[in-house]
Length: 144
Image 1 (cartoon, rainbow, N blue to C red):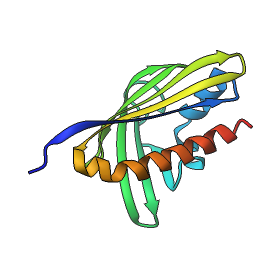
Image 2: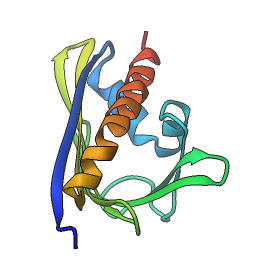
Image 3: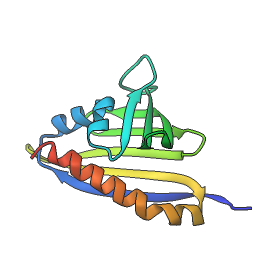
């Protein structure tokens, strides 16, 4: 019926904080609930950082939303974290990548490869982009 393909989305921003501080905030999974729009995040594995860490994120309002489950597949503090999305609805990969711009400024690159029929992705991409952009702006304001 619909062919599933890989669809790319990415957003970058500058955070006015040292790279180690930005990494520490990103890698504290439950704290992401404070800045990710309409999302609650929690660790579901015994380990809380590094390869193999399992994370769940529920995005929605009340009982209506989408559960995103993922597992960390690459962990290179304070520069890179890759995850694979393992849920029933959300499939693909995600990446946080940090680059030191100066001792007090960090570039934060967020990207996703979403496995979905192209038409479905094109329909949800604007809302996904706006939601993530708002979330990352909220994250950057933590350091203002």
